Amino acid sequence: MMFIKSKKVRCNVYISIILSFFIAQSLVSAQELFADVTIDISDSGFVTITGTTNHPNLLVDDNQSFTSKIKDNWYFNITKDEIFSEYIFKVLLPIDSSIYDVKSSGTVWIGEESNRLAIYGLGENKNISININYQLSKSTNNNENSFFNTINIVLLIIIIVIVILLLFYLYRSYSKREVVVKSNNVDQYKGLTVRQKQIMKVLNESSKPLTQTKIEKILNIPSAAVSRNVHSLERKGLIEIEKVGMSNFVRIKK
Image (cartoon, rainbow, N blue to C red; front, side):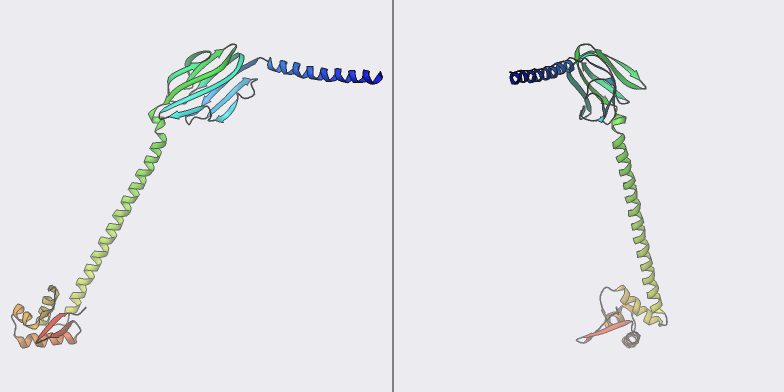
C-alpha cells in the first residue's frame, strides 16, 4: 500500500511540473509586445535601430539586411509578424533623399528632422511592416564617382607630363648628338688643305663611294691633284680607298 501511495505522489509531482511549464509558456506567449524606436538609414544603406522595445530581435546596429538597391532606387523593408499592442517609429532617411513610395501596417506621415526626411508612424494591435522606396540626389550618388574621376584626371595629367618630359629629353639628346657630329666633322677638317677639305665635303655629301674620276669632274681639278690629296687623306685615316677593277672607289672611313 505504501508503494502504491508513493507512486501516486510522484505522478502528481510530474503532472504539476508539466502544467507549470505550459502555464509559463502561455504567459510568455501572451506577453504584450511594444516598441518605440528610431530607424536611421545611412547613405550606403546601413540601418541602425535604437529605442525601447521588448521584442528580442528588433534593435540592430549597422545592419544592411533591411535595404537593397536596384539602379538608382533604394528599398527599405522591415517586417515583424508578431502582433504589437502598441508601436511608434521614426525613420530617418539619408541627407538629400527623395521619397517615391511609403507603405506601412499603421498610420504614417512625412516630416523633416535635422535636414533629413523623416517618416513617422504608429499602430496598435498590429504587426510592424514598413516599406519605403527612395532615391538619393545625383550629387550624393556621384560623390564616389567624382572621387574616382578626380583620381583619373590626376593620373592622366601625370602621364601627359611624363610623356612631354620624355619627348623633351629625346629632343635634347638628339640635338646634342647632332652638335657632336657636326663638331667632329669640323675637327676632322682641321689641318687639311683647301682641296682636301673640298674632297671631304664631296664624300660627306655623297650617299655612296665615289671614284676618283667622279671627284675630278665634281671639283674640276686635275687627276694628279685628286690622286695626291686622296692618298694623303687615306694616310690620315679619314677615308678608305677600295680598288675595283681599274677604278679606285673612295668613301669616308667609318
